[in-house]
Image (tube, rainbow, N blue to C red):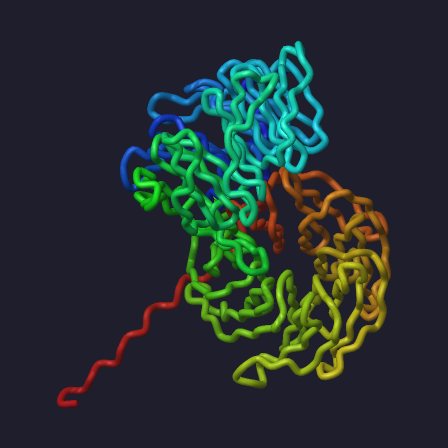
Length: 615
């Protein structure tokens, strides 16, 4: 039995965390479960419980999980199971909505959960596992790919394997699985009726009263639509086409009859009575996310032809995607805001200022008193000389698209774009930044220490060294096929020359930049995952979901890797300076390391000169 005291297993890692502080916690809804007038939300950072009995929606409680939360299921009205990337966590649901951690099962890894009150089922990478409430295994089933949805019909487990079939598993093992040849993406069971979101094959109903011979009852909205989410309420079936359309069907005749379609950002839905609960992300033309700032929206479906938004909960928008630091200040991309956060006292970060920017980039780099935002084909330059009042000073459009990258070179910047090429841009000599040099090609990562040399990823295959000493005629010096992804410059110290720390698709490579025009590889460490990279003097850091490795660079030919106690959920960008490590971790800004010098106080407000008498 894997059961253990939740407090022991959760609190010990917290004690071991080097995490010193956190700013801007927010949720991004992944899955809802409804119980009466309460909605449980697996929102990535943990579980949030909302009271939807009246407007506006009220948050009753939030409980953090030890890893990113992706799904949840009520085992009983007072026992909540949450699937995280670090295992299944269980919570006691108190009558007032308080969530009390009771246990964690780190080896029970699942992406989807479902319970019938007697058993808990979870979808894994290799199939489906069924557990008793004490998490002892009852049954295991293999599937050709992970199930996208699970539901129960009595003690029969129903699993939707997208593009393959629906399986009805008898957990007693008394019969072989029943197979329904349906390309299901989501499903729900109500009584003896199975409702299926079958992609382009429409919304389908099956009678499963006789599980041995499921019988199709209806199929509607075939072709022209791609339904991937479904929810069933009182006389209503709701189907979603991710990312931005919801269809409502009225079922009083026994067959779903289309009532209306409305536009709504949607990735997850749930229904209860004639209420619909929805949350979603706006997806731009490049497939990149823009959060709505509403992790839960409530619609009244009493009139199925005219759904009515009755309430919503507003929160920080997310995702928090970019960060740079000098060790005391963190410069953060928190779409649609650029924010300056005081992280000098690591345990007490505080926001100093924010600036709303249209089409803001996802990532940030800092050089002197300038911050550069990039990632979506446009560059924004921010004057950060006064951290209490940052100013957008210039913008430049590469006429390309994401995932673009950029770096400072001398008093210019370069933009590496997969669509429009390599650009050298002068932002000081002209009122509007202008391209003065370039190279055709498809470019991704761009790394520079601000001098005349830039290291870029070309086609995602080659590491290319580009000389920009003649800004009007940049040219490639050398190229090596290593599949670069991310990289950082480690400044020279007494132990090593300037180094390029490069995350590639096969591992981490370290290059000596003693001759910056001819980088020389000093070491290669195989690494199966693609990590975010940061460097600070004699140390570099490599972060992926759940772990951060520290790399000792004092001997670049033999870098020493050690696992830290930092455990980010979903790192988007990482930066390090003066011993401080900051991570834009999708759901929050995480701050690690010692306290550093605080920023200067804000300048005193200007006083107006007094007018002379008679003037």
